[in-house]
Length: 320
Image (cartoon, rainbow, N blue to C red; front, side):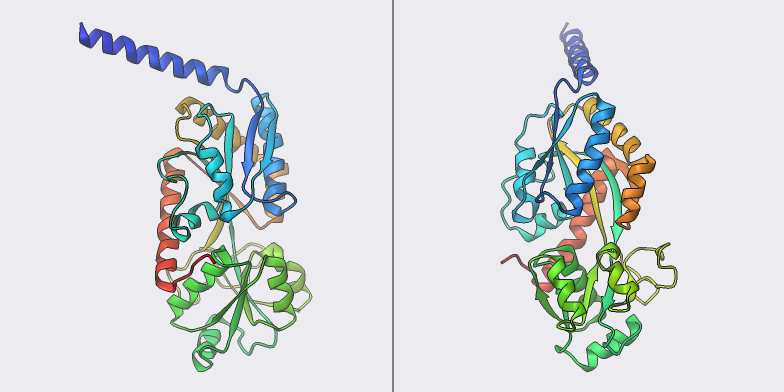
């Protein structure tokens, strides 16, 4: 009798979950973007959100919640109802914040259901033309000869460019001084002006300066050479076998979201990013479509957290 009751209860639960998936969405979906409006991530989220809404049959409303290294927006989603009507457009800082912030208002591993990784984007190591180094090997030799004299800029403490440079310093065994800025734009301006010598940046951020000869590219952080820069070696090719850094973004839901709803959103998102219009937008940002759903995305995030934890611990990087 007890076994029969358990079986009936299980069947009822599965039926309820299946019904929830079939009825989803029943109203507009809120996509929380943990950045201010107008930036590259926000623009991309809006384009993807519009297409996702068309596929779901309900509008996807962008809700910008910037601040605290994306943790403000993430916290709102972590505490939202698990009905699939609130989602997080999660970028790389979602992983970084787990090691940069000692006390988060949520448990990143427990409070979210990974929906899908959508795309990844590499960085390139750029230098001012006056720097007497045309390769990574020459840069390392120069940095050792001028220990503590070279400088690199970043978009701020705890950002991907900052930690990418710290990882490079660890692997190369060199001392290069960090100069943090309030955003990538000011950092690039000072690099072009020669106030700093180096920076890790996305290709799209510095494309015009590279084309105009105001900056030179020493290496890419991708596992293979970039199609747009076939003559630029990777850091792997330059003697750093385990050095791969990429920016990424995906979508997360509150942990209590029904598996059928998570699966539905993941499927529709995969179709969205495969569309020619979205692929073109991603290519313009040097991003590559790379869809990983559910458990695969969860494993991807864990690997990223472990990578940044190593960098933060060894370098002493911290948010001020």
